[in-house]
Image (cartoon, rainbow, N blue to C red; front, side, top):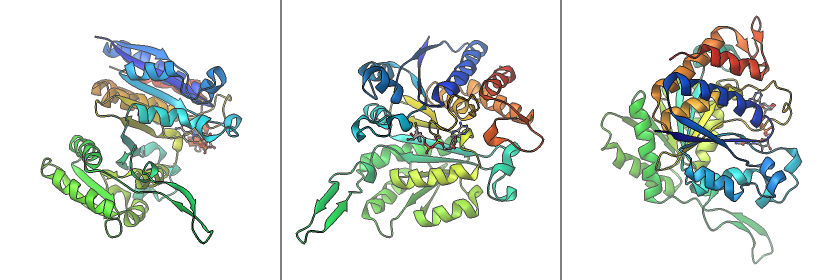
Length: 359
Ligand code: NAD
């Protein structure tokens, strides 16, 4: 059986980091006999330059047919002056909405080798391993009506609508409960049920779902407290589930606990487990073309792809272990460099991971 993986390198450092992840995927393909076949397509600024569109029809078509998608990053100053609808980011949003990628999974893992990169004390963060499950296609970012209107008194008023239907809450809830089952069995649902009715419903549905997952311990936390607890005692969490806007903010906060954005993968899944996998960082135009970007977030995204969309847990773990091994060897790209370590470029890091892979 073959499975198809679509590579979308995108812009800036995207092509540099995706190329290293591709080498890693080719190697695990051989080692574990995965039957993966690869294709590539344009998205973002690169697609605008070639076709005038951030998400050409052929890219969307290939994405729909693929078993999994690995994306680098999109965007950059070259396209910043374009109108909103034609910006590179629209390519990414178009993929998310067309493929109904409603579940965003963002692990925040602190490798013990990098404990000093965090701005928190090592004892607070060392061994940190949490997963944030963020609803990605609903909530206030998409709710209607929205806009800026002029009131009768002539004053302008901006407004958005925070809305979630039961089915939207239930499907993201199930993803989170299942993720907690596969981890340490603890799920914290984050809401603002003391103020917002939509999250009163969110809390009710989570309670209902909990009956189907007796092996998962469900707790609830208000978002303001969750933001505080993440920096006070982040290791109390296993899996966090929350809506689009709270998840946007909390996942960036959790990401920074680990000290380097160059290490953090993410997954966006739909109901059929088709997923788009990408590093949490952007296209880093400031270092693009220099060959110094950290490819590990993209390589770890490839590991998530094997785990969540292709059901190849052993191959996923092999990649994660290889990454840990190169860190043990003291290899560091500039963003995670520390005293006494050996500074390497993007390609050296990718090749070191390939060399460290074992079946
Ligand atoms: P960014 O994540 O691209 O960069 C922030 C800082 O982190 C920069 O100093 C950069 O050099 C550094 N950095 C990021 N990834 C790195 C890596 N792998 N190795 C080493 N250093 C790394 O964020 P930004 O500067 O705010 O955005 C730049 C562009 O990326 C913008 O056009 C933005 O819209 C876009 N963006 C895209 C995505 C995406 O494609 N998912 C996400 C965020 C931002």
